[in-house]
Amino acid sequence: MSAPQEILLAEPRGFCAGVDRAIEIVERAIQKFGAPIYVRHEIVHNTYVVNDLKAKGAIFIEELSDVPPGSTLVFSAHGVSRAVQQEAEQRGFSIFDATCPLVTKVHVEVAKLAKEGYEFIMIGHKGHPEVEGTMGQLDHGIHLVEDVADVARVQPSQTEKLAVVTQTTLSVDDAAEITAAVRARFPSVREPKQQDICYATQNRQDAVKVLSPQVDVLVVVGSPTSSNSNRLRELAARLGTAAYMVDSADELRTEWFDGAVRVGLTAGASAPEILVQQVIDRIKALGAVSVRTMSGIEETIKFPLPKGLKIDAATGLEITQRNPETGPGAH
Image 1 (cartoon, rainbow, N blue to C red):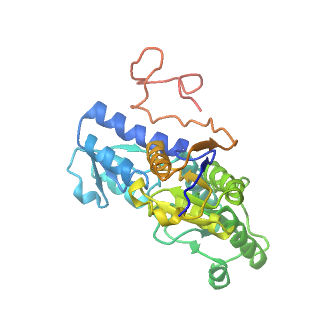
Image 2 (cartoon, rainbow, N blue to C red; image 1 turned 45 degrees about the horizontal axis):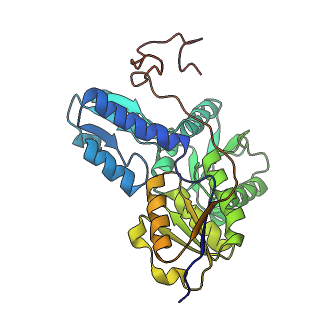
């Protein structure tokens, strides 16, 4: 059995701005209000992150009835339906919304166009919490399609005012193919000015497209529930590269690397860098002697925290109020 010689790291990989923000919201809420803090659904889809926050005092729930009265509640990065939002408010929880701002943008667009009489075709994966949250912005008039075949079956009540929205963590290529099928069937469909698939999903997929042809095997660090991580593995496989996804270094199998000279490594947007480093260490133990990072886009986006959790960098004190025009965090 020959051992791998080199590890080639994708750039960018790992945490995106929305994940960074969501984790920070939970950690700051624990610091400020003390444990436990309740989080509806996994804050992000990563086992390591969820277990780390549990150890710090977060309790993850699916049903709001499991949250004691008067508790602090955080909505996950995937967003929630209007019904969940209203129930949480009625129960009187202190609420912090960790929904990724790029998901919130889709929610705002849906609400705005619905007022103008639009129906929607949503491209996404059934049962994914982001899809449930977006579809739950409306009581009716939003139709889910998962593939091109679904497009032929969908029956909106009218086609004069029809708009398409997508889950933010889809395969860019799959979404384009399904959108083309929607456009072919409904030529006047309104599409977003800027695609709904988030910059981080796009960047990580683009990096895999560059990386895959250069390696014999690609390893994606990500949890099975992570949509964007699954798409990275699928993309590499579609490009003809042997590709595997692991939640941790413990899941690596030596036979994957038999005959492989160069191993590619990337991580989904909810996978922390510590897991990448542990995978590197394990592959090095098999014989890899060098690690190289490919050149790629440097992501500098940072999303502001909700009011009540912001800290002034200069003073270290919490920002309790701000001038909406010029104050810290104005956007």
